[in-house]
Image 1 (cartoon, rainbow, N blue to C red):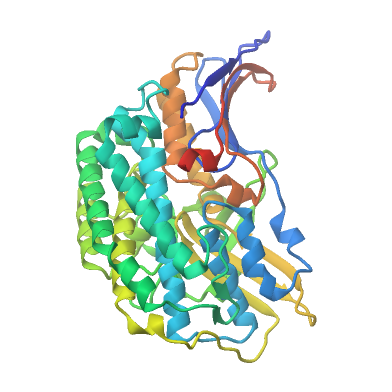
Image 2 (image 1 turned 135 degrees about the horizontal axis):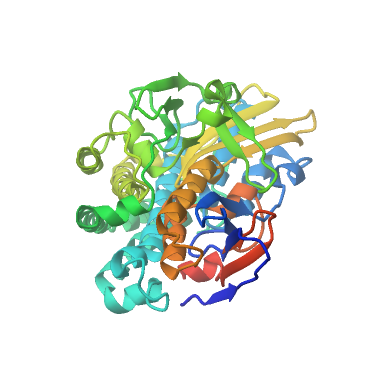
Amino acid sequence: MTNTTKIQETKTDTDMRRIVIDPVTRVEGHGKVTILLDNEGAVKQARLHIVEFRGFERFIQGRLLWEVPVIVQRLCGICPVSHHLGAAKAMDMIVGADELTPTAEKMRRLMHYGQIVQSHATHFFYLASPDLLFGFDAPMQKRNAGGVVMEHPDMAHRGVRLRKYGQKIIETTAGKRIHGTGAIPGGINKNLTPVERDRLLADADQAIKDACDALEFIKKYMEKHQDDAEALGAFTSNRLCILDSDGAMDLYDGTLRAVDRQDKIIFENEPVVNYLQHVAEEVRNWTYMKFPFIRQLGPKEGWYSVGSLPRVTACDYIDTPLAEKARREMIEALGGKASGLTMAYHWARIIEIIHGAEKIKLLLQDPDLLRNELVVKGKRKDEGISVIEAPRGTLFHHYRVDRNDQVSMANIIVSTTQNNEPMNRAVEYVARRYLQGTEITESMLNHIEAAIRAYDPCLSCATHAVGHMPLSVSLCNEQGDIIDRKNRAYFNSQQCII
């Protein structure tokens, strides 16, 4: 698997230039980067453009409520479990299932932690590790998953095992590895058999070991490559996540907490049904992806980050021992919770793989998973709102249904959308650091891609769009004329992870 680079260059009579990187590679979906230079060759503006559109919230209208958890997950083939569970949780509220049975609650959690392990392992070992193992300036023919297999087989095997284990969890709980049907409004449609439990439990310790080995790798990398890490972005941001009632990390359910750039609480213990009181979205005319912000701070100061790093640093603790030990070590090494090191997302991602594997082992030892109480119902409502921590960050699902049980309104705010402003700032940070004169260097392209990749964006989810996920950098003059462009050919996400 290799990428090929296509270079397009146009010139105008003016001194201004625009660099276009199209497509961005080794991320999910299709995006491009444009960098506008002034007459002195300095970066005037840098933007990550999302050029796909699907409008999923619109065409889900009119569908029956029980169809939604199955249909809405089709907006993505990478993190469908998160949308499946997010929609099911919102529909729980509509069918009056205020409290699920222990079996349903724990089966869903098991499915979700399987997704966390599978998705984080895919990103770290298949997409990110080539940059870390070979360096950002290594030839692209080598800097890919195939290169990892050839030169670092132990690392590749860890990634394959962890991803496979996560997929087994998902397949067993949801019925399929992709686009399963396990969660239904009010509960689940199957429990775990003793044979399935024992089969999954047999591999739990190996998954924990593989994740801990990856942790040692990323710790050593960050210690030895501080300059490389800082080169991909070092700026603080507000952070948002959900936590349990004790302030512990809870990736499946909880209340909202937001902290500012100095790690002070903006709000906390907020039920998800109040999310519109705290989160708003700004539309800009150059991208299909919106810009969410914390309403009380406004769009200029209220932009925030979500995902592994905000979760690990905004929580008070993690309730599994190995992950909590790793969390404390990372915060100490970064000099505090409010670290703005973009590359630390990878470190936090590995901590969450450990946490997910520990949680899976604990759940598989719980006899509730074998019981038959699967579904509950109560007083029907017309509106349902849910939140879940998807691998890439906080995910909101919001629906209204009419008297015929048909969806009349849908609003989905995905994690990549919430990381839109931080990703744009990371692109500008890297461009200012690496752009030399008016020449587009391979090193600059690689570093811009790596900075975006650290957020693990899923642009198909963010625009709810069908298609591929490419990156394009263009250099334009002040009038907007393209005078230099570099395109990266893409391979779609499915090819990327096979």
